[in-house]
Image (cartoon, rainbow, N blue to C red):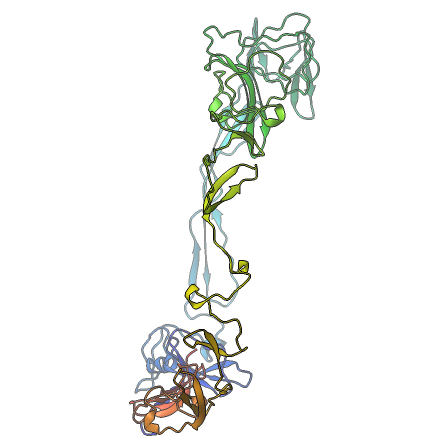
Length: 537
């Protein structure tokens, strides 16, 4: 196996394998790490380029995120070293040179410190410039300015108004807020209530007050003894029952030019909002119409778009008058014909739905003669729909005596031997004696040698064994099931295997020109040549 290539399990996309068999190695070119599997199939990194790069980058220089390596003198460089130091710093009782610690800004102070004992800084606040005193009062409000440190940097008093002016529909006045009380009293139909708990004054009206403008809701019955005149454009009545003594309601009082539709409409739900209307159509010579299933509400201009509706059904008894221009014929059940057209000179027929004209059969004429008889066809109504003159012919069953001669298409014979062949002997049809060769011939390994007589009949059969030389097999390929290979040729220097691309299992030659390739079985169980590899993860 010279130059045989053996590869570990590897991956170009996954940084760490999810699991490995015990002691199974794997390498990721993504993370640059070499892994090995433990006994519980978990994975641990044991080396790889990731770690060798860290070692190769080690330096004695002060370089972040690198390993420290001493130089030739045994030294290395660093910005800060964090460690527990042993020596003078561990045992000193004070620092070598005392320092002064000072406070500046809004507080000032300083103290000397050498580390031998605790010290305290006494601080004094810097004056803000605000005059000391009391701010605010009964008629004044204090106004302060506060800086970012929360200190008051200025203070002043602002005067508060102590007088309130008020006015009414007829009079006006002023109120001293420090000593006077504002009283709000009710008038005719108006009451006021002061609530100390909610700091509110409630103004209410009784049922004798009606506003002359704005919306108003009356919770209860409203009795009007005089006439009610409404000059607005719309009245909405959200009630279940309307009772009126007027027996004749007048509509369209403003229909001066006869341009408005007169009637009423309603709304209902049927696969969405629909409308029904019964009205006099001003745009259609004043016809009354009953419409249903409308998809368009009648407009604010008091017109109905009849095209958005379908014609409704009116159930009523019609007495007297004239009926004309019916949209549909009168039905059979109502005493009509359910049809509005008939053909002159034709029979009338009920087809189960309506009365209709029957097409004529066009069979008028004279039929039958000495050599022909009429064949007559009639329909379900008994009408003749077809007549055909048919030539008179005699059936053989009507021949009751004599023997039909050859010249008339007969056999000139009235007896034959059952199961025998019939032939013409020059005078009549006669029976021919059988050859006696009835039977089954030819076998899987033999072929029949056949002898025939002057009439072409088989007079003798002899089975002969089939024997073939291989040179006589000139087409096809012997399949596996017959002990063959199922193939007609093989590649030179190939390994013979069952053909994986065929359902017949025929043999084929598997070849490779790459040195070091070995025969393997892939994940589908198919033999292939290839380099040994651990696969990918």
